[in-house]
Amino acid sequence: MSFDGLRTLCRRLPRLLEELTLARADGSYARLLARLERAPLLIIDDWGLTPLKDSHRRNILEIFEDRYGKSSSIIK
Image (cartoon, rainbow, N blue to C red):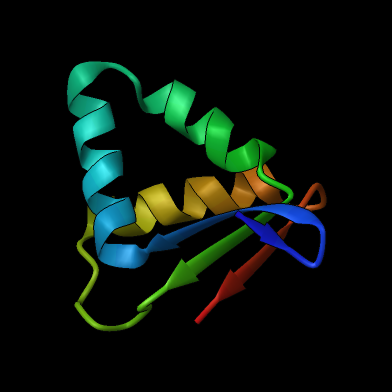
């Protein structure tokens, strides 16, 4: 996906949280985090529709820490 010429990764929050949980279980968590970090623009949609568990909050924090100062993120 492209947004104003930027390669963009767009995920709904519930689906992203599910991907992160599955990636932790199958050992591909580091690879998924690297892919999320490399995207010049990450859009997370449907934020706030469901309460976050502690593990979800830690996962989201890790994503934003990896991206800090390197790339842009939009939460909507």
